[in-house]
Image (cartoon, rainbow, N blue to C red; front, side, top):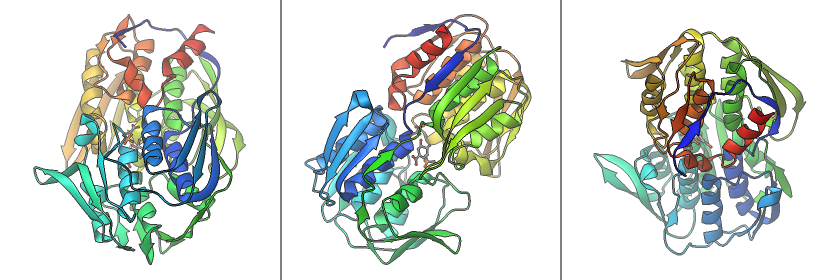
Length: 434
Ligand SMILES: O=C(O)C1=C[C@@H](OP(=O)(O)O)[C@@H](O)[C@H](O)C1
Ligand SMILES: C=C(OP(=O)(O)O)C(=O)O
């Protein structure tokens, strides 16, 4: 898609039901493939990344039937994976790469994972190190003393370990828990800061022997049982763009239906409420994952301090929170934002580049191994030519910034939003038009 021209918009209005959660869609597909029999996944997210996971599972003999118009996937599995022909390409999906590495480490066949150039630059030692301690035979491409994709995985006999997380990463935790299903003994993961717990919830939903013990998550090997069907709630990370747009565009009122509100994912809501954002959770729905409708009204935002311990609960929302901070009154400090440097692109660099163009005062401060972002909000930004840097969250964030800007903007490579939210612009058009 060529450069998109974006005109400022007065307000957004209406009700929308957003696509299913990306993290939960990946997990639903993987666990359904490990459970013998049929599982139907409803409201599955058909984005580039989740399709990567489905293709990899299909390449390992899992029956995958896609009903796109109904947002449904039907998985038929024997409960046992088969050796894939050739390499499995993870394209740009870090979640697929790291979680499948954990899964493949414990299989009785060899495999190889590769990916697109952006993924080949992302760190893999964080997952290879603990998997190797479990006995996995993983050979990575080494560059500058660090591990990257492609990786080759030898069939190995795994044994459980007790692992204290060195990086607050749900992908790493999930890889270890998946490997733990195929390991002898118990596998235990301790987190200093809790990350999204979708894998734990989904494993329990599929009957795995998983419990909390001594502050750690403990899983035992064993078979999974399909619950028959899984309903994926709406993606809070996708909702965040609409929430910020409704908060900053004067006179807006928006209702988002059936959004996942797992507390390990709702840090952005808490931060925006702290900034003065009027966001209400209504019609709460219980289940293996909690959900709710979100009612959002235009609000006057003020700056805040986001603490390091909050980062895992809002990591993917940070780019759009940076937009909210730019449009707020006063200073916002985001402590310990360094993980943003190792996403699809360096999101501190991509967002700083764009926001500076929009006239925002933004800088970083590095001290004692921690990187903070400091934004001085002035209540307004100006239109400019924005760049996606090939990164979906940067593109979607700068689209929101452009809607709120004074003057026309443009955005290159808007098609990259397909990684997590192919219908992004059409949902916005519907809410702007009303
Ligand atoms: O587990 C997951 O589904 C994810 C975890 C996060 O990554 P990290 O585990 O690297 O923090 C997040 O950024 C990613 O979009 C999805
Ligand atoms: C970082 C992301 O995903 P992944 O790590 O799966 O590539 C994201 O969706 O913002």
